[in-house]
Length: 332
Ligand code: TYM
Image: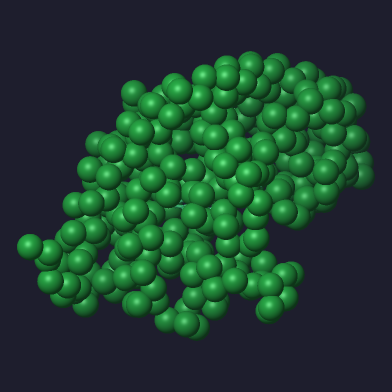
């Protein structure tokens, strides 16, 4: 079975629909076809300033949501990044083969640091993609299921793997990004040309899975749609309706064409009303299951302890090989 690894940041109280449709949904289905490793990347969540109490809560909330969304600890390895020390250790080694300019070209770094200003930009934000490369390479992942916004980080990961292998001998599998085109960029409901994002979207532009379902339904109904009245899939001229169609198709496992047939001759209002219902029915059981996992902290801890142990069984072997190949003396 090919290996996959992916990660998600615990930087909000709830995942949003983009996280689910762009990434986690694929993680769930890859459990049956791949040897799957998924982590909640808490080390990545402290690069922009954070509150310790919120971080701890959000990490547990993230794990509970992932379980509620369908990750099954019997079919995948689910763990918290900081429980596996090899991530930070390999991150250091990789940072020493990354060019300063190369890291500086990362678009997410440029955007986030420009917004924060130089004095508020941490070195951790700069080296963030190198740590992400360590996450992936430690597990010898073949594929990395992510949304479109992670493509450049995956390119860096591939470059670092190849560079290390060339300089120090074959050590890492060179991974590829696994990006499902249809759902790779769910857009902001109020600004359908930019991606739905916890940091950039306005509250009405983003659907949070754990938000009050009635509020989410309202957001769908007030989503910005396009001029004209015909329901067509056309990302360029009808980005608003196209985004709603993408969400609708993904949540109901229907093809877009099937939806177009269903809504032939009907208006935007019908589509929004139906999608709002679909969404409510989708989030309700997820919220219940998330609550149930949170209500049983002992079980959650046990799942994470097992996950960390399974992760370390792989990551320790890779780190030892990397240390050996880079020339460190093995401890006696
Ligand atoms: P993060 O936490 O921002 O997002 C988690 C996943 O959700 C995807 N995503 C989207 N997909 C479609 N449409 C959207 N609007 C949308 N918004 C977010 C992201 O592409 C991502 O797949 N750097 C990563 C976390 C990470 C990681 C890793 C990922 C750390 N180490 C190793 C893969 C492998 C991030 O910030 O994701």
